[in-house]
Image 1 (tube, one colour):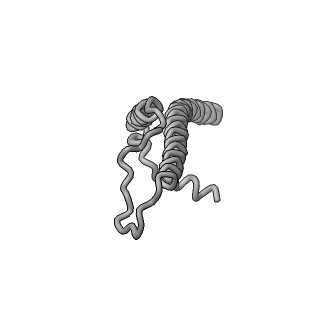
Image 2 (image 1 turned 45 degrees about the vertical axis):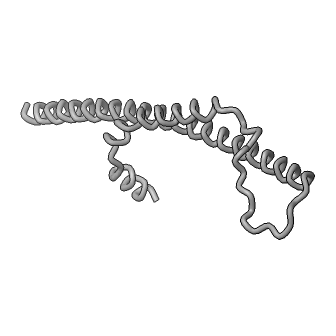
Image 3 (image 1 turned 180 degrees about the vertical axis):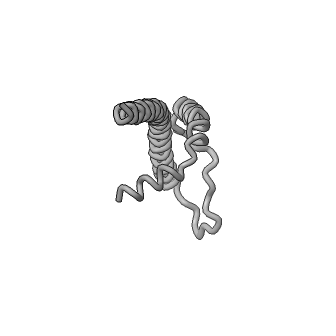
Length: 132
């Protein structure tokens, strides 16, 4: 299982992910601002009427239908707002995760360099000890 994760992590183009993270975050923020500021639709004026009505509906039926459509539109707007908020939060988390991964990568590089230097010093010490 660990080999699968390592393979997946090696195949991910981290430079592309890191370079596009701010773009994703900006896009999510723009979506949140554009959707979050819009008021919930309360008066849909362009509701298409059914094409084939066999009889003329009464005013009460039309008002009930309009009320149902307004409720449905308000529900859809609420879902859209919550979805865009979720996208914004996920984009921010993605940006934080990428920053942490980049920090870990740099630290790992420093640890690898330190390990290599320590190994070279140890080998030189062993060679000098055996020569004397």
